Length: 148
Image 1 (cartoon, rainbow, N blue to C red):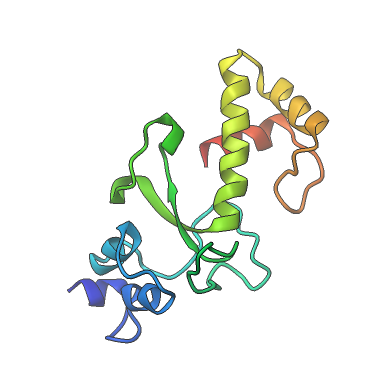
Image 2 (image 1 turned 30 degrees about the horizontal axis):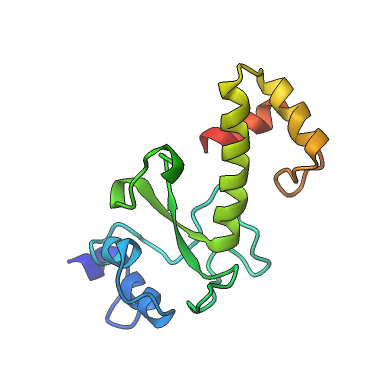
């Protein structure tokens, strides 16, 4: 039943695709086996892979920036988030790192009672790259990046 829910037969299931990339076990494979991942696709709000959300490198040590990675979401690992199905989405290593960097910096500034506009100004001043397609952080972008 999980294979059907995952969208394919023996060679086409998401779990099989993850295994072919070198993930033999772990939360992403378990999620795929249970039909909780419907496609081999980066689920980050912003994906940066030049070939698109569905392109992944095989898992190596160390992992390349385009290898599959479990992203702690919605609760960051640093905030106590666990690597369990209800707190994981599939990402590229690079997309995960970029998103984590933004969220960590935003969280720190919000904890200092900064407004979204002040956070945007601080990120721009530090030269933190905003989402692709834009060249400056705005209050609306800060909120969207933080809650997505």
